[in-house]
Length: 249
Ligand code: PEP
Image (cartoon, rainbow, N blue to C red; front, side):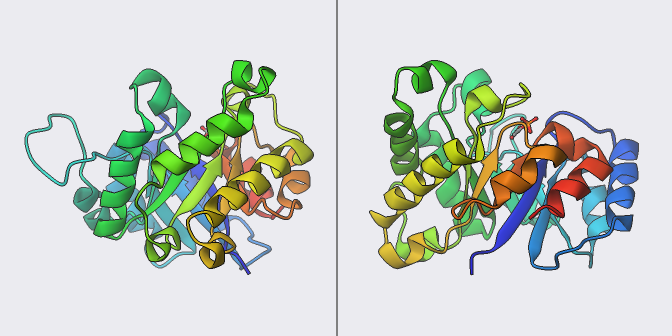
């Protein structure tokens, strides 16, 4: 059985005090399914305090990005080793906001994925089409290219350690969600693309859905055979909503 995962992407939200409060609320929440892996991805400045609060708990820590370089003169960047030693296990790579506002390409994301894996971090690799691309009937072409590009050169062993997040860009932060059927179609397509890398491993890679996941639509999405959980933005900032989404896996 594939690992079920619900990850919260806090984006640029949360002072240290707000992080502490939200994490304490989440730790007090009732988890109905012990088989779901819960991940929170606060901003860099909150990672250290978050790792102390979460130490020994069922909630794992993730970061929202990292450098493609291991160390050196890269002002303002954060290396994978810095994340690992701050208690981070997961790292979101290639989020559409990084692609859109920081011109991140599949090639760059691929370099980050390889470095994350070498360092011992689990990459959550984001792919997804723009609204215009969906309307032009190019969803599979776009997503297929992103999957091939970001995973380029990965062995079956490496593929076994990644998580993919399908996040249609038009659904992120807009309140518009892909229907469970629309999402399932793309998830099945992504799994088929993973087969091209390694047939056995493809069936083991968790593929999360992201894009305005809320307590009232989570169950329908999570019930789809190729949807293994979700990557949640806005709703992960409210403990009750995030818990409801986790408990809908
Ligand atoms: C995201 O940022 O990855 C995301 C899916 O955001 P939201 O849930 O707010 O659409």
